[in-house]
Length: 189
Image (tube, rainbow, N blue to C red; front, side):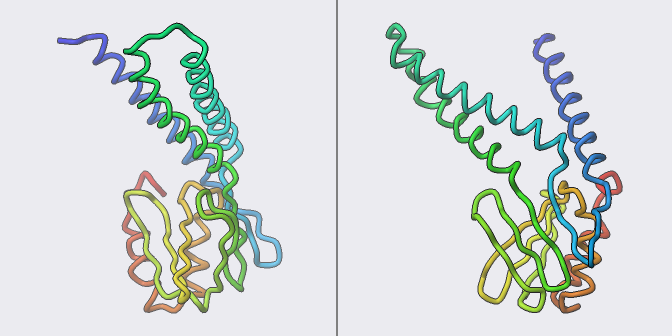
């Protein structure tokens, strides 16, 4: 029996659960509504934490490649560097992109910057499909021109999004997503 491995898994799992709980609590604040418009954005705690973690991961990848280029030859280390380090570098870069996600929501529609697809916008009247993922905790909206926008439930102000969707999107388009949102597990509200 690998006791240190079990202890490590339990401590790591508890730390991860604690961080997700803190993030969910930080994101649970209602947005500041100004003239019927509000902003969806990750809480500052999340942006700082992910920014630091992303910079460390990306920096680690650069240092590891530097060590490979200027360090002593080691075939076992080469295998690790050429497989794991690019993955770590990509995770770091993606993490850094995620902290800039921000949406403006008003009676006209939703627009903003996504992590992977740049700036997106859609008018409420153009929305032809709305889905809610219980697993990923996000709303996925698709417009008639096939533009897709995902809004995470961890964004501060996300609690107001279902009401806006209910108000401005055609009922037959939004009904299933709103029902899935209302039926999600209690701890995620």
